[in-house]
Length: 553
Ligand SMILES: Cc1cc2nc3c(=O)[nH]c(=O)nc-3n(C[C@H](O)[C@H](O)[C@H](O)COP(=O)(O)OP(=O)(O)OC[C@H]3O[C@@H](n4cnc5c(N)ncnc54)[C@H](O)[C@@H]3O)c2cc1C
Image 1: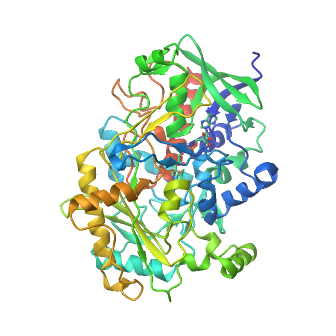
Image 2: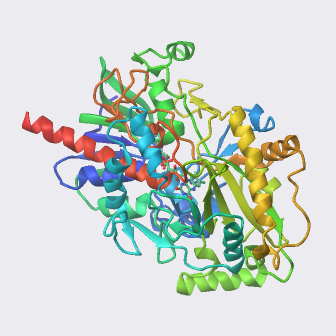
C-alpha cells in the first residue's frame, strides 16, 4: 500500500470543527493540509448524484428532509434505551462537507459563561469564558454589529430570525407571562430569558461551516479536500501518529504527515476511530482483536446529550401555523417566494424562539431550555422514520430540555472494521435528578400553555402530560429524544484519566489531537454548533502556536 498523499497536517472529518481547522491551518500558506471527509461535496453543482439533497442542505427548511436522507446523513440508531421507555433512538449526523452544520437547525447559541468557567474548574485549563470569548468573536460575522461579546468580519454569518410569526410571538409572550424575562440577546454569556433565535444564515441560505470556512479555503493551493474518503485507521510508528489510512471508491489509500494527525470526526466517530486504531479501553480492544497502542479507559465514555421532550398543542383552525403554509397551493406560493426573494417559509429555521429558565428560583443560572415554534410535528412519524412531517391540523410546540443532564452514556466500536457504526448507549434519564427534571419541565410547559397570551390561539383540548408525577415521567420517556447534541466522548482535562490534555493532544501518544464536540468535558447550556466552531478556532491556534515554537526552538 503506497502512501499517495503527503501533508504537514491531515484532518479527518469536514464538520463544524474540521472546516474551521482546514481554513485556519492553510491561511498563512506555510502548511500543506489534507482534509478527508466520508461524505460528499455539499455544493449541488459538484455532486449530480445528490443534487436535490444538497439543495435541501442550503435551504433552511430543508432540515426536515436532510434529517432522514442517507445521502447526507449517517442515520445512526442507538441501542435499546431502558431509561426512555425501552426505545431505540434515531440519531442523525451530517455526512457531507460541513458535517452536522450542513444539516442542523441553524440555531446559534453559545451557552453560559458559567459553562466554560466550569470546564476550567474541572481541569480544562485555558478554556474559561474569558479564554474562549475571543474565539467566539473571531468566528462571527454578527449582522447586528460588533460589541464586547460579538464580532464582525468572521467567517460565520449570524443573523436575527428573519420573519416573526405571530403564533411564535404569542409563545414568547406566554413565556414572559409565566415569569421568564424577555431578553434581546441570548448570546452574551448571561442567558436567562426568552427571545427569537439568532441563526447561522445569510440572505435566506444556510451558513454552515463549509460555506463560511471551507469553500473560500478550497481555492488555496495548500489545501487538498478528499470527499467520500472514509478514514479507517490512524497509522502509528511506535507511539507516534504518522498518518491515516482511508477508503475511497473501493481503494485503500494513505496520507502521511510531517506534523500532526487531527481527528475531527465528531462525537460518534472520533472515539470509534481512536478505538479501532488502538487507543481505548484495554479489554474492549482485546475483545475486538485490536492491538493496544495506548490504554485510555475513558475513550467513548462521558457521553452527554440534551433529551428534548416533545410538547405540542392544537391551534384554533382560524390561525395559520406553519402547518397550513406547508401544503398544496400555499406551498407552491412559498417555493415561488423563496425562489425570487429568499424569503418566506423556506427561509425559516425549524425553531423560532427560545427560552432559558431556572427550574427553581434559588438557582444561579438557567437549567432548562425551551424551543418554541409555530408548528407541530407528527411525533409518531418522527419516532419511526426520523423525518419531520407536519401534522395536518394546525399546532404549536414548546419543547423543553434539561441543559446540563447528569445521565452519562457511551459510544464504542463494535468491530475493528472502520465502516461499521459504533454502539451508542445514550442512557437517557438514567439519573434520578434527570427524571425529576423531566417532570419539572412538563409542569413549566403546562404553566406556559395556560397564560393569557395564548388564549386567542389555543384550542381547549388540555395536554397529554398526565396528572401524577409518575404519569408525567411516563409521558417524558415516550415523547423525548435527542436534540442532536452528543458531546464529551473524548473529553479533555488536566487529570491523567481524561483522554485529551487541555491542548487537545491525545494522552499517551505523540502527534495526535482530537478537535470537535467530543472534547467537551461537560455539555454546554444550549445548542452545540457555535461552541464546536469555537473549539475549532481555539484548536487551530493551539496547533499553530506549537508549530511556531518548533520553528523557534
Ligand atoms: C439534525 C441536527 C440538528 C442540529 N441542530 C443544531 C442547531 O440548530 N444548533 C446548534 O448549535 N447545533 C445543532 N446541532 C448540533 C451541531 O450541529 C453539532 O454539535 C456540531 O455540528 C458538531 O460538530 P463536529 O465538528 O463535532 O462534528 P460534525 O459536524 O458531525 O462533523 C464530523 C464530520 O466528520 C465526518 N467523518 C466522520 N467519521 C469520518 C471518518 N472516519 N472519515 C472521514 N470523515 C469522517 C462526518 O461525515 C462529518 O462530516 C444539530 C445536529 C444535528 C445532527
